[in-house]
Amino acid sequence: GNSPQSQQVHKLVDLVGPTEMSVLIVGDTGTGKEFVARSIHEKSQRASGPFIAIDCGALPKEIAASELFGHKKGAFTGALQDKTGSFALANGGTLFLDEIANLSYENQVKLLRVIQERKIRPIGSDKDINIDVRIIAATNENLWSKAKNSEFREDLYHRLTVVQLNLPPLRHRRGDIPLLIDYFIEILNKKFNKKMNNVINNF
Image (cartoon, rainbow, N blue to C red; front, top):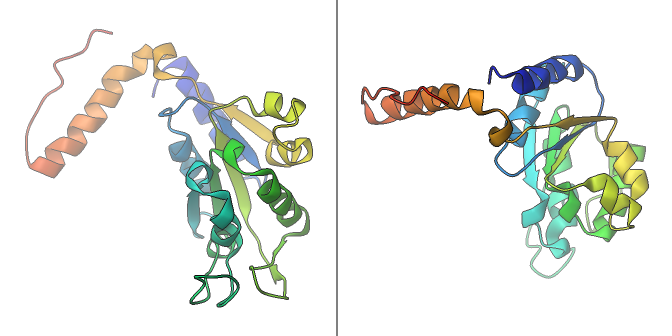
């Protein structure tokens, strides 16, 4: 967008993108947290590496560790083959952990260890694997409040929130609406080979 609020987000993305700092993106559902995370990745020295996105809210706690860190064949019932976890897939690049507030306490502990030691251990393995991953997390909740209420590990909060980037909802940047309409019309015109025009300009 071109609104003052959106321009501030652009400036922050330009500022933190080239660094190795962990970033926490906070915003309502639909404000574009993953889009901003990708923009940070693309402005980093890791841009040629992978960008792996994980929705922590959709991960049952029983399989979260397997999804994040991987597992060895036979590690548990149903583990019919080795699985490469998201951290290993993101090695050399960026791992985006969306809805981080939904990660179980047990898996928060494991994530903290990985951040501190930069090593992962797949379930069922007796060997650590070195990893080089930048973490960008996101939430639509007040993570600091949850940390103070012991609903989220405070030490993990501080590890994830070297920089916090707040995304304003569209209702607070209505001047961006025509630009977004033009953007989606362009996509639809290409997709359906149409020539629709934006007739809504007054916001």
